[in-house]
Length: 179
Image (cartoon, rainbow, N blue to C red; front, top):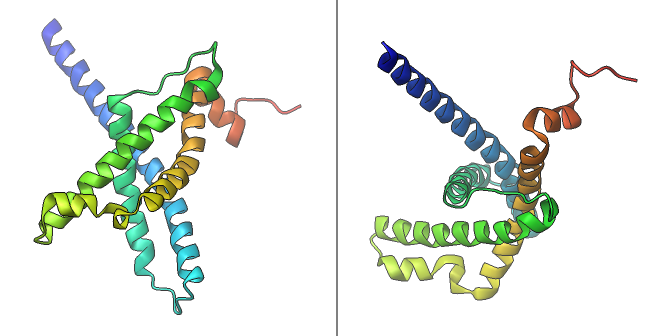
């Protein structure tokens, strides 16, 4: 009988983890999607595209979902840790650069796979990421870092202070009395 309860506990724990990961992916996709749609809108207005094609927002949301998954893969490989003696900023600075490297590498891989799906050579397609312009890759990485940094800071604060406390700080709590 004890083995049955252990199996049920493992199943419920797996199910809870799966639901938690899906929620994290959804929220992160919404966060990144907001940024990517804003950047797509900015790019369309800078290029004087009229009318602004709605498809760019769909592509931005798809890219946000892919990038969210890449970031979550990066976190699975290299989990977020915060050293209280160094504080959140110093603790997460190196990790943020590692996450950028992981996402950048996965974007190169995605470009290669996309090329193969369109009948092109994998390595040629992979190296064509960012139009093979190092300056564009640096700009992409910097903008991505600026987008990811608040997310990592929030995650670090949640690790140190607890998710419930952080959510009540940002959005209020029914349990807290107002003075």
